[in-house]
Image (spheres, rainbow, N blue to C red):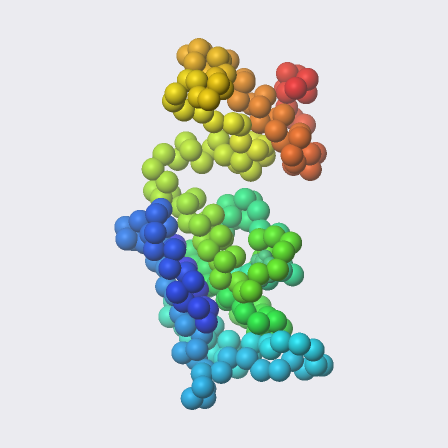
Length: 243
Ligand SMILES: Nc1c(O)cccc1[N+](=O)[O-]
């Protein structure tokens, strides 16, 4: 997979050189390239924004600079890219989105700042490529870089070979079963007066699996009843329904 990120703060994406995503880049599983939007500015002050039509506070990022940047990055590849634009006005980014994006050959992230990117940039891009405006949550950030970090991590870890044990991808919160993950424990068996649940020390795999699913169902019902409501009833057995 190739990922390009266009931003006025390239250093913000430095964490993508660490840990699993960093290793994926070193191994060639992930071809990640960061571009400074100011490379496409046309004046000596390397200006990328201007005042908003209609008035109001803040500045808007210029279409001419963004348009040329996206055109040039797209021209470097030989396949159709999927443009990802992080924005508070975007469609919610979920694990399902991550799974879908992990199947794409090439993602280009446009990280906006200030009050956002001139709307014509996305409109123009939609005439030539797939565009997804995504939100990582209902709160205000100062730009799209943090969201790009989140999306690249969520997508990158799904690429075959990135996570050592693919099994660990199956039993996670928001995983295939649509539940929150059960509580986990390790040594020592007793710590500050709290003991690890006996079933986890029993060595009885079927009972452990049953306990874990029960805990996941209880936690999901308590913290995210909306996720429980979305579950396909066919995936719940009679015991699940009693939990
Ligand atoms: N929430 C937000 C923002 O305030 C600015 C850029 C991107 C996002 N987001 O993806 O959620």
